[in-house]
Image 1: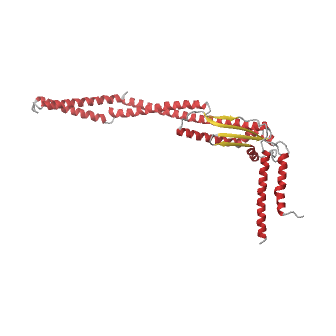
Image 2: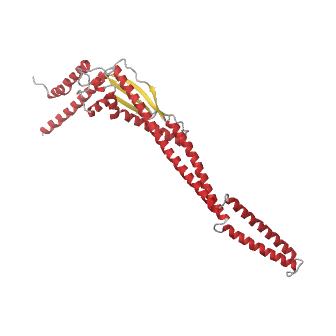
Image 3: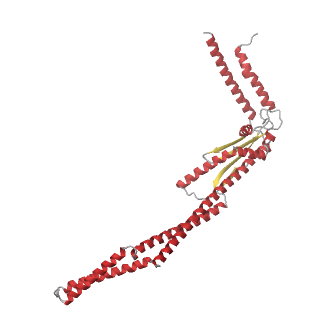
Length: 359
């Protein structure tokens, strides 16, 4: 009796491969064990007090956690794990389960990375900034060891990055402090040279003295002018008393004009006071900047002695006691879905071919 095409198609695409898969998952495939760990990054600088600073800090922590996840799945981590627990020794140990095991005995780095990413899953929750590690192996202790090494290397990486950034900040603050100190010394030298060149210790004091003299002359001018006005009420302009007061008033006004001209002329006490004030203000500003930079440098040195960010372990890697639940059943179910999908595509292709051949 000739078997229908549909039955042959189902036999070769679904039934036979499905039966082989059932035998494999039931009797051949090795049990796998999962060790889980949960970690997060925390900042211990304590400088975020809310608002924009807090939002930027949260964004930075999320970025650091995402970078940490990428580091866990990098070639550097793969090489470290290969050198420490010896991934290929357990994953590639001889077994009848040649499909689930790592092969060949000495795989290329790219092949090992693909297998590593199948056995080590690292998830990142953007809402809580938590990183979940799921290490899988055929031996419970080996799965736990992989998760432990992932945490240890991640902690070392976090400390190294934190220390490196702190030392970079310290070096930058040290250079800035040295620059401020150099500028402060130059400003003080300019001030001392100006005092020596002009032979003054306090230009502002000299300017105040000249200002006081002008004020005094203005007062005498006003008093003499008032006295002359009163004298002219009962004396003739040609009288001796009136003439004397007029000459005194003219002399005061001439001296007052000369003193005012000297006050604003180049090189006089007034202009020297302005130049002196500019030099002293610049020196005082640089001194304050130097003091602040020294304080920032001391803080940077303190930060360099401690970790700005710390890897906090929420859940330590557990030692699994039972194999992954429903692992074989899940694998078999996915295999059947793939076979039925392939069968559906093949059946549609045959139907289209049959329809065209009948035309």
